[in-house]
Length: 448
Ligand code: TRP
Image 1 (cartoon, rainbow, N blue to C red):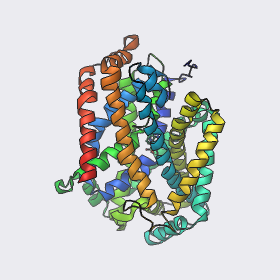
Image 2: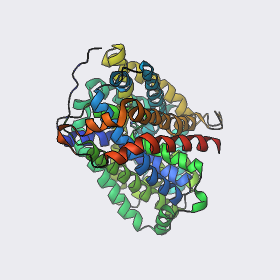
Image 3: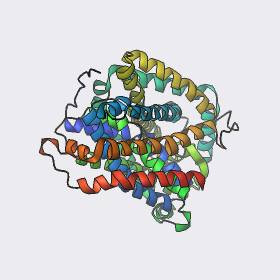
């Protein structure tokens, strides 16, 4: 199949920021503190950090390398890099399912964030205590119209950016908006430290209670790493395909992963201590940040402005991630099926919007309807994060390790005289340790 030339990134910084833009999103700010709270604190944090080093970082190197070598979308890359096994395109279907499932609930949370921009701007969140903030969250999300409106606007924005194109669309804004998110979070963190009872929460965050360690927690940790690093479905493969041939892949991977872990830990260190300070239950679920963060801002002078800016930035961070998720499906339809970019974006975006309506309603009016013991929203999250993404990651590392070959991959990494000091260690990780750990945790975590 003839290949069109893909655009390269304007600068190294532009590439890193855009990839960080994909990786840093609701997964760090919203999902990480929520799963830490639900999984017993320190034990989960410990497992998460372990999974980052053992699985996340090596897989990040693998996906970037695969993308740069294949110069294609996720489905095409497999058939391109091997002539031996034409069936490998089949594993390309997994990412498309995963991306669809993730976006369907991602849009819901991003829609909430958008609703909070307007609620705080209207002064509704100002002066509320945590009990009232919890009521407000239940009101906003328990209603039929508000969430759908938020989701619609968010999806429309995502689709528009995908139509404009990756580079022009995102690179420009990420440069100044991502640092702004981090700055605001640092201020929140500093404030949290002075809340009464906060340090107890910090202890809970870092002290692993060994009886909390279980396969279930390990599976949650793996799922969180894949979700947060945007791994396991080819989003990072696509970013890699835009990378220049002389770029340093291992260094880029460390910078991207480091930034991602940093933002997640920062969010955890804001939300968890404030649970202790405000006496909020860790079992609060998906509404956690929508209760705790406005509560902290309400202790600031000019809280309306702070809260509005924060949720605006969070919506933006979600947008850069959603764009990369939609891009997975759009680039497949465009390059393998020859659909036009706009038609694919509008069609897929529309379809996901419809599914997201049900996901949104399952957090509110239709909470009781259960699938495998979970409401539809949690079902989508669980299936995508804890099953589809690790499974996708497993296929990707097996492909790199055993079909394409780590020799070939290392040769790609060391092009243009780049050094790759850990080539041997990385190769063992990719061929044995990563696939065995993922497989083991996936099976045990689902069974026990
Ligand atoms: N990593 C993003 C976040 O933390 C979400 C995301 C974007 C994603 N692209 C992805 C997750 C691809 C999995 C796969 O919010």
